[in-house]
Image 1: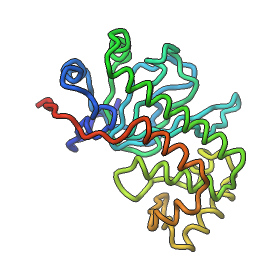
Image 2: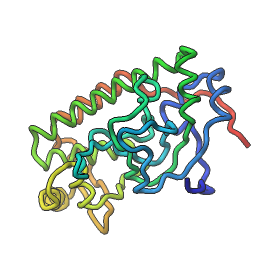
Image 3: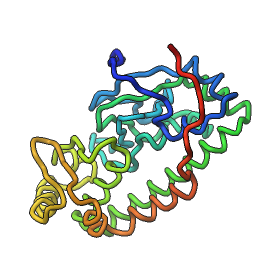
Image 4: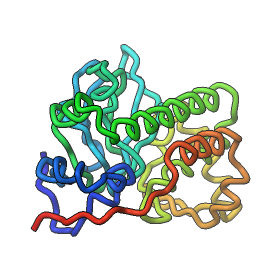
Length: 249
């Protein structure tokens, strides 16, 4: 594990950790570990039992479905809205997807046994984690629908918006090759779709960085899959103001 940077980070940047009540925070705080999450880092392989649950604050993680020959396609995105490692509190232990950091940043990790202890306690936090899981299921379902029925142009817009929702800025560090891999399509298709957005003044692409210049027009160009998944997420996990909690010195 890489050594955390000197940048000041706060667990309340993660929307799930922000909902912790003082009693829950008292149990969790000694176990939360701030970690750097560099791009390309694998947090858990498909078929393995996660050693940790990860709560990203500024990093963005892709959950990938893998084929036997090594091909992959993204089924969901996790950022400061959620947690990587839902199998730990769903009773399945092993995870069916690979968790790969796509956007470098930071997050907090919690040992698997700690989060399992919370499940066994039946704490109120468990119900929040289950609601997040339902929102995740909606995201996976809409991604499958989008990949089957909608154009590469629409898929690209949906993926950019999903990343933007979980990014601290309007810029995403993603190459066209990575985007093609995430969408499970040919790079030429992503290149053509990205050029359309750039010529329309919606995005600016340069050296593996995509800057979103006009979010409203990006939303207009995507399909209904983005709005359906986001609406379900917002219904299940409405924005909650961070609770007061002391940080470790």
